[in-house]
Amino acid sequence: MDFTKQALDQLIAYTKDEEIEEKIGSCINIIQYWGWPTQLPGKPGFFQDEFGVIWNRNGADKDIGIVEKPQIKDLEDYHYEFPVFDEKRLRQEYEALVAKNGDRFTVAGFGFCMFERAWSLMGMENVLMSMLICPDELDELFDRICDYYLPMIDLALEYDVDAVYFGDDWGQQRGLIMGPNHWRHFLKPRMARLYQRVKAGGKYVIQHSCGDCHEIFPDLIEIGLDCYQTFQPEIYDIAEMKKLYGKDLTFWGGISTQQCLPYATPEGVRDEIIRVSRILREGGGYILAPTHALSFDVPPENILKMAEVFQHQEKYLSF
Image (cartoon, rainbow, N blue to C red; front, side):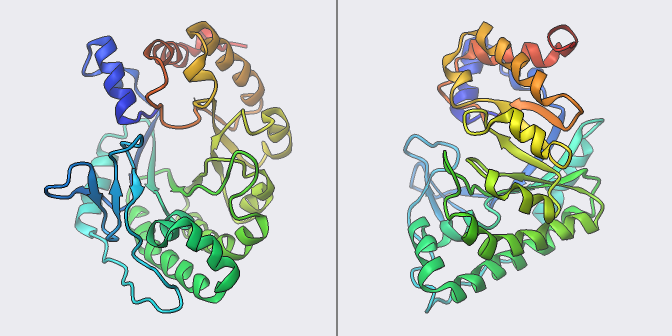
């Protein structure tokens, strides 16, 4: 269970317990690199990451923000240099990660790992237009992004992690943002290189992508994906997806942060967890979880009911 800052602040205020997140707990121990944004001096709400991208968190999104100024304006004439990643800092984070893993499933994550890294550098519209008007130059950019992450994956694999997680949103409420053909051309070969590096190290591969990605599930299985997150019941026919792909993919999610958790009663949350679990637990291959980080519109009562069911599965889910 993951929280946005606003949701966690509200839960702490409701419970009057500063340690409530730790008490709720998680079976997964994860840390995610996505550029270490740091507060800009004298500019409240503005953060700059290692890639030089400035994120404005003064709007509704207090956790990531929106890009203020693209770093790459013209793919046919650009001189952007990727940063040298901070190996010492990354090692310190991995050492802290594995030191507290206990018996939990431990994951090294990379957010904004491909498509999102491209659009954060040059803007969403420019990336999509470049797929049509300058595909060769965009191919080069994606290769550079891939080459940037490969040594970071190698570093992660030096530590006692169980899986490597890639965060990269490709989907909309219906279908892929760029369509399946462009995904296969631009993203599939680069994601295959990342996945293969992880598999060569004997670890599981987890892919996060919000939205509807069902058109490329066979492609993801082909290139080595083990677990797909986030699995949204308002988008997918979860029973059909389980039937089609459950032998090859573990699904992570299923409890909707878009419909159920913000709007149901606590009893409705309980019932939905039971319904989803009946479908997805059969035969294994399911990680019971919200579909995304809990946002400010999820009532604390619903969070606590979900935690209760998660922590007492022998009572609620013994079927």
